[in-house]
Image (tube, rainbow, N blue to C red; front, side, top):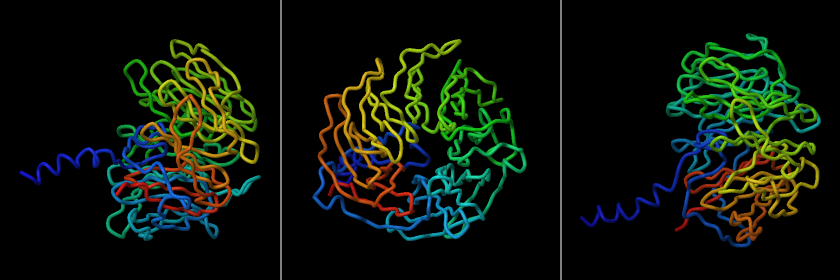
Amino acid sequence: MIRKLILLLLAPLWLAAEDWPQFRGPHHDGISREKNWLTDWPEEGPKRLWEAQVGIGFSSVAVANGYVYTLGHAKGKDVLHCIDAGTGRALWKHEWASDLGAKFYIGGPGSTPTVHEGRIYVAGKWGEVLCLAAKGGQVDVVWTRHLAREEKVRVPTWGFNGSPLVLGDRLLLNAGVAGVALDLKTGKTLWKSADGEAGYATPLPMQLGGQPHVVVSSGRAYSAVRVSDGREAWSLRWFTRYGVNAADAIVDGDQVFVGSGYRKGCGLYKIGDELTEVWKNKNLSTQMNAAVKLGDYLYGFDGDSGGPGKLRCVSWKTGEAAWEQATGFGALTAADGRLLVLTGSGALITAPATPKGFAPTGRARVLDKDCWTAPVLANGRLYCRNSRGHLVCLDLRRD
């Protein structure tokens, strides 16, 4: 009886933890549902559990079933790493020949692995798509595709950077002008969109007319297409310098928010037979990392890498800025009504997410420069990396 009571008392804490099996998390919104994590830190920051070197790139981490997966580049190869989440021990890696792609930046893979029902799906920088199965210390290749070679899909200027999305029996990828769908089990092409330069965002699932759709970006637009056959439901012309439509769209009910850098700005649109503009301005020019929506406000980085970026809070309803903080460029995630911010220079900051202002309760230097990848909170552990492949795991669990 006592044991049952203890289990009941502890259950809320256990239920508060969750895996993070794909880019932007299990709910595709950059928000962790974890609660009861450390929000005030000593001067040296949260306890550092382990560190790893995962190679050059901007891949985030996927965390599932006690394992951490991420991508990096080293010695002429792109590498998928599998790491023990508890100890940081490298368990296995799978690699393939690849160009670094250092065109006006450091290069390396930018997509994040997706874990689904024991399989790992990877979208490579130059059109490679892989499905792998891992058991114990072994990893087997289930199937591979190369979209550029086999489907003649055009490779965008900085390579493919959108992460794979699993929906039902399909794997959705941001390639072509409005996506490609592969059979999840075999990798067979089910449909592909017209030829053109893809954007760099990850497909975002949404429902339209009771049917599953995804929002994808090209170099010229954000579009919603039906998952079953790729038919376009709507398209928003969105021209950004160099075709860098990289930040994922945010959908809430019958509204969609998009933003991009190079002073293009952002906008909110009502979804109907056609998209209707609610508002449009330059208050949240999210160059690479999408904002997060908490309540009636958006929190994200306005500005471009290498420039004087700012963390901003913007009203979802009106587009008006509630506050801004001169943090420089960076990325963020959210959990339990709070922001977890990683600045481009490697400072980790946490603060309540409120339109009243930015009031940090914890701040620490956790990495060196060039941190463009959003931190990930999963099962009480926070994962942060920089472009040079320095990955750290911090303990945010309460005793």
